[in-house]
Image (cartoon, rainbow, N blue to C red; front, side):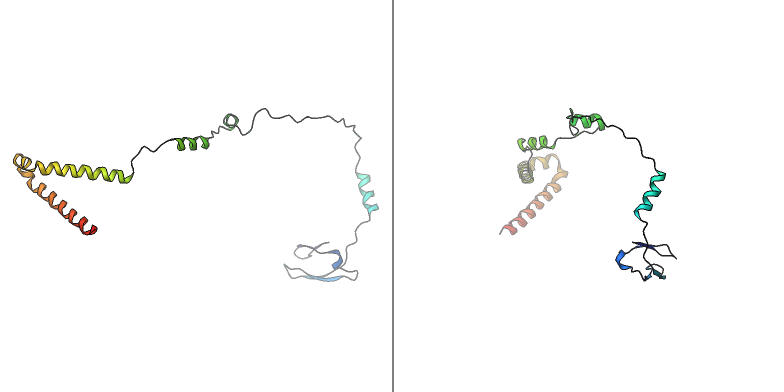
Amino acid sequence: MIVNCKICQKKFNLPTSAITESGRLLKCGSCGNEWTQYPIKEKSEKEIKKTFSTNIKQPAKVNKIKTSVKNKKREINLYSEEYLKKKHGLVIKDTTRNKEVKKKSTRNGFGFLSYLIIISILSIGFFGILNLSKDVIISSYPLTEPYINYSYEILNIIRETVSNFLI
C-alpha cells in the first residue's frame, strides 16, 4: 500500500497487513507530521470493468498470416578488416604478425659491454701510438708538449686507482 504524507507529499510503501481496520498512527520521516491512516478500500473488479468497457473500443480482429522468415547468414563478417575499414574507417594492425617477425629477427646491435670494450681498445691503441710518436710530435709542434704530458699523468692516475680497486 502506498501512503502519502499530507504536508510534504512524500510517498511511503507499507505492507497492507500493517494497517488494521481501526487505523494506525503514522509519522512522516521527512517532516515529522503524524496522522492516523485507515485502510484504503480498493474498487471492486466489476466497477473497474464498467469504467473501462464503456470508454475503450476493441479493435476488429485481424487474421494474421504466418510467414516463415529464414535467418540469413551474413555474407560479410562485421568484424573483418575490410568491413571495418570501409564502414568506419578503422585500420586494425595485426599484432600476431609482428610477434612472428620479432621471433624470427635476430639481434644485430652491440650491447653496452661490447661498446665499452671497443672504446677501451681504441683508446689504448691511440695512447700507444701517441707514446711511440711523442718525440716526433713534440719536435714538430712544441706547444703540444704540456698537453701530452698531462694526458699521460691522467692515465697513470686512472691506472693506479683501478689497480687499487683490484688488489
